[in-house]
Amino acid sequence: MKSAKEFAVWLHERFGDVKSGVYLTKTDIATLSGRQRFTHEFISDIHYELALSGMGFVTDTHREKYYLVHLPTEYWQVQGDRYQEDCESNVRTITQAKRHN
Image (tube, rainbow, N blue to C red; front, side, top):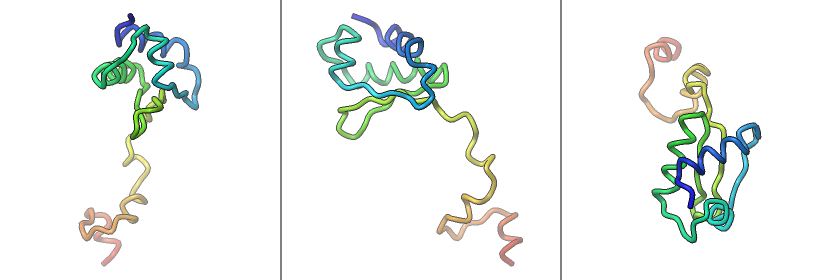
């Protein structure tokens, strides 16, 4: 039985170069980790270990597929104010308030 850390290391070594990411099923995880069943905490621990190396491990709503993805490394506000213009909020930043007056 592999620990979450061992499984995370294996996933990263095996699929770290796949930029589009991969997904695994429950059966895949059970077979590859040597566990008959696994808990949500096991998945969270895998995610924690992978996040240290810039990857994430998340599931869909039904917990049928588990996705190994590369995490974004650019902060969302680096993209500028264009996202805030789409907000339907009456709260504006100082720079936006000046433009709208």
